[in-house]
Length: 111
Image (cartoon, rainbow, N blue to C red):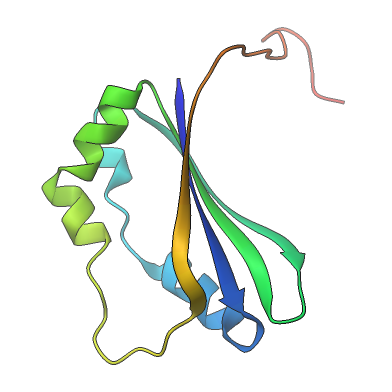
């Protein structure tokens, strides 16, 4: 398993716009071999921003790298001209290979 994350320092006044961009876009992730799951996460607030992270789970690093070279990636990341900057600086990418996974047994009900 490979987890790809981007962290965004979103300007506080732009948080709703940032969320709407993500919630309204066509990600094309479901078209990709090896895609497992996506999460948009909202984190803590600082004086000048709110931390957000996009969190994508892939079957393997190779599947993630294929995504970054795909036409689907280019479509999903096309920029909307004329929009104001919603976050400070560039997103910070972090990629992680799974070393251990612990999951609830399928026959056990969530509490």
